[in-house]
Image (tube, rainbow over all chains, first blue to last red; front, top):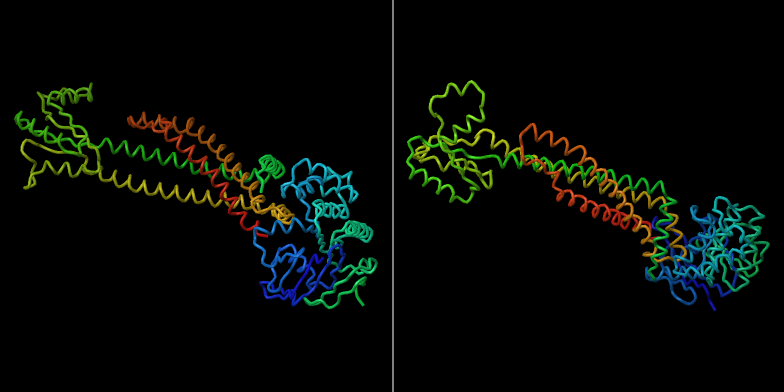
Length: 228
Length: 303
C-alpha cells in the first residue's frame, strides 16, 4: 500500500522561487526513506507539502490514498493528526514541562485526560526519558530535547513520521541515539521519511535514498548511500 | 470539536500565570487607557451639567409700567402662560420687589436713600428651552420698535446669554471629539498590546497547529485571555475612577458650588450616570479584549 505518493508535483513560491519541478515518488507503508540533497534542493518543501503547511502549485499528493492537494482548510487538522513531525529546532514550548509538552499534543486533539496520563509516560519510556517528566526543555540537553519532540510526534501513534533535519543541531553521539529511536519507531510499522544532509548517518543506515537536486528527483535507490 | 471547559480554563489560567509579564502589561494598558476615557467622560459630563444649570437660570424679566391696569396685567399674564416655550411665570408685585430688594441689600446705605417704592412690578419668565429667549423677548416689542402697552422694559441678559449658548455648543462638540479620540487611542493601544502578547506566543500556536489542533481550539484560550485581561483591566480602572470621583471631584465641586451659589451642581452624586459609565466600560473593556484577541489571532492561526 502506498502511504505517500507525489504525482507530477511542482511548487513555486510566491517570490517565484521554483522549489519543486515535476516530482514523482511513492513511499510504501512501513518504509524508511531518506530525502537527501543540498540546501534548497526541495527536501523541506516535500515535508511542508505533506503536512499542508503549504499547497502544491500543480500535481497531486496522496497520503494513505487520499488526495490532499485540494484538501479543505477545515480538514487540515485531521491530516496533521495522522502525521507526526520532527524538526531541527525541536519546536518545544519553553514554558511547559516535558510531560505538558507531550500532553499538549494530545489535549489539542481532544484526548481525555485519563488517556493522556497513561500515554505520555509510555511514550517517554520509549524515548528513554521517563525520569524527565517534570523538567523544562531548557533543563535538557539538545539530544534529550529532540527525543521529547519525537515523543510528542509519536505519542498519537501516527502512521507517518516526518523528520526535517532532526539531527541538524546534534553531535554524532546524540544523532546516533536519535537514529536508533527512529529505526525503532519504523520497526513498529510507522512509515518514516527523513530529510537530511548528514552523510555519515545515511551511509551507515543503508536505507532507501531519494536524492533531490534543484527541485528534481535525480536518484531513488534502495539501500542507498548519501552520494557518489 | 468537543468543548472542554476544564481544559480551556485550565489552559487560560496556566498561561496567565506563566506569561505574567505580558498579562500584566495588557491589564495595565487596559486599566490606564480606560481610566483616562472614563475620567474625561465624567469631567465632560460634569461640565455639560454645569453649563446646563447656568442655561436653565436664564430668564426673561418683563418690567411693567406703574400705571398698568389690572385687566391688562391679568391679560398679559394669561397670554404668557399660554406660550409653549414658557415653563413658569412668576408675578412680582411692586411690594414684593421692594421686599426682595431690602433683603438682598440688608444693612446697606442705599436703603436709607429710598423714598416710597421706586421699583416696578414684573413678570419673571422661566423657559423650557433657554435658547428661545430672544424670540420671547421680541414678543414684547411692538411693530414701531417700542415696547407694547403696559410694558416698561424687558431684560434677559442680552449680552451674555448668547455667549453662554455658543460656549456650551462649542464645549459640547469639543468634548465629543475628545471622547472619540481617547476611545480610538484606547482601542489601538489595547489591540496592540494584546497582539504583542499573542505574537510573543506564536510558537505555541505553531505547535498547536502542527499537532493538528483545529483553529477554534487554538483561538479559544487566547480569546478567554483577552476577555479576562479586558475585564480585570477595566475593574482596576473602575476602582481608580470610583476613588477619584468620590474623594477628589465631588469635594472640589461642592466647594465650587458653594462659592458660585449654584444649586444644581451635584451631578456626580447622582449614581445613575456613574453606573452607566462603569457598566459601559466593563462591556467595552471585555469586548475590546475579545475582539483584539480574535482579530490579532487571524494572522497567526493561518499556518
